[in-house]
Structures are given as structure tokens and as C-alpha cells.
Image (tube, rainbow, N blue to C red):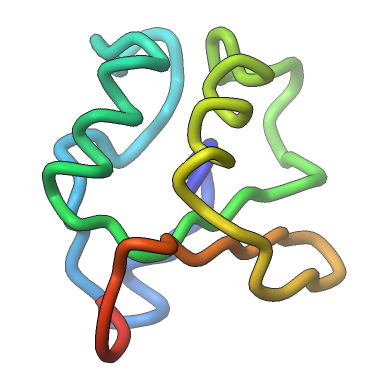
Length: 96
């Protein structure tokens, strides 16, 4: 979930597969390249990008670069009112 300001995991009952729950510059130690590599290594299947944030400003450092890199790994799946959802081309089987 980028940037991660929603209670996404709580409301969906899903367990996070990624070591960072908030992609905020104050708590995210990873570069866009490292995030992309971690997503690949941890077999992350879904990328959820929130379009309109409750937060003021942009919390994600290098968001354009990060999303450009992630879009080489993920393809568009669904567009909702406030979310863009992408699925990894490398994931097989059910939801993860």
C-alpha cells in the first residue's frame, strides 16, 4: 500500500509481506531500487496506490521514481475511485 496511511491491513485482515508499513520519509529506510528488489524477493503480488491522501504534502520520497520502477514489475489490475491496484506479473496462484 503506497503511501500506507490507511488501516489497510486491519480492515482487510491481511498480513503485510513487506518490512515497511508506511512509505513515509521518516520511517522508510529504503531507496526506490531497494523497495523494488524487496518486492521481488518477498513475492509481493499486489500494489495498491492511493490517489487522494488525507495527509498534507507527499509523504513518499521519490514517488515518481518508485512507481516507475514498480510498474516494470506490476501491471494494472483495477482502478477504483481513490485507488489504483496493480498485480505482479510474477505471481502465480491466489491472493497474497
